[in-house]
Amino acid sequence: RQSCPIFRAERLRDAHRGGNRIYINDITMTTMASNDSSNNNHSNKAMAPPTTGVQRIGKQQSEDMANMFTREALPWSSAIVWPCMLALPLAMTLPSSPLRYDIIFPKTWYEYDFDSQERPKPLGLCLGITAVAIGQVLLWVVFYAYKYGHLSFGKEPTSIQTKGPRPYEFDEGILSHIAQPEGFVLLGGYLAVTWMFRLLPAPYYSFEGGIDYGKTFLCLAIQDVLQYAMHRMEHSISPTFYQNSHKPHHKFTNPRLFDAFNGSMADTIIMILIPLYATANLVHINVWTYMAFGSMYANWLTLIHAEYTFPWDDILFHPLGFGTPADHHVHHAFFKFNYGHLFMWSDMVCGTYRHPNMFAPKKFNKNV
Image (cartoon, rainbow, N blue to C red; front, side, top):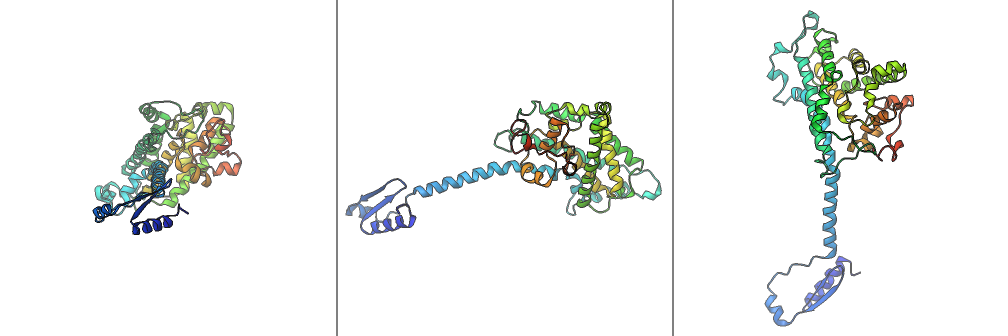
């Protein structure tokens, strides 16, 4: 009963009326009698109520909850990487943006009549490549902060594999990432050839409208289904074919973020460029949706090679069947599972999906 705040308040009131003050805390109750002269001397002075143990505990609990919330919430700030992938097309199409394309570029730079048989204007091509580049740079910045604990009070994120991430210098990783000829060099060449030689459907050259998010998602899904088929073909058609195409990428059994495009020219052509061109002819979109799709695809493909798990992986992406770094690490570690990249749907349908937790705690850490 003495721990009840109402009871303590009543005792304090009754004691005050009788000339005594009773101080009660969570351990002891002490009664101090005061004489008349003391009461007269201090009657006009305000007495601050004592801090009870319950109050102290409540304050500490509030502080602990706030700290826990910050520790849990701060790593989620890395999710800014997703809208960063769309930075350029968003900046150039939002109605209130001062960087709208029709404000900073003359019409002669982007208006194009596909039926005229003239060579397309290069603005769309240049903006598309820039969109991917900006997305990559912002991805590196966010990943750097995440990797080195700047988003988790100095604590390193959870590595996917139990043996931990491969050690490397961050600047070396970036240089190796952008220097691979089978990566951005080949992709840039594909974009330039298909754009300038009018190999894309007419809507791709239109600047009208903004990003169609539904079609962006559709392009990502179709691309991944086609990539799944080409990926399985590379693994199964023949040992010689596999060794000359996809095997160079599989030298990384514990990949890092910057291994995404490290493989072979044949591998990039078969597993990336052919599905890209097929997707372009299956889904007709404008230039902004094309930019959004290209940047999302290239940056998500990079992200699934990361050596760490992200906050959204276990509670959001796994239930939805979206591809995570841990899903792709399963493929690199065991070769015969999880051929999908952005989505695990094809693997689930074809029976080749394995959840990363199936290999915990021996090979993988739990809940990655």
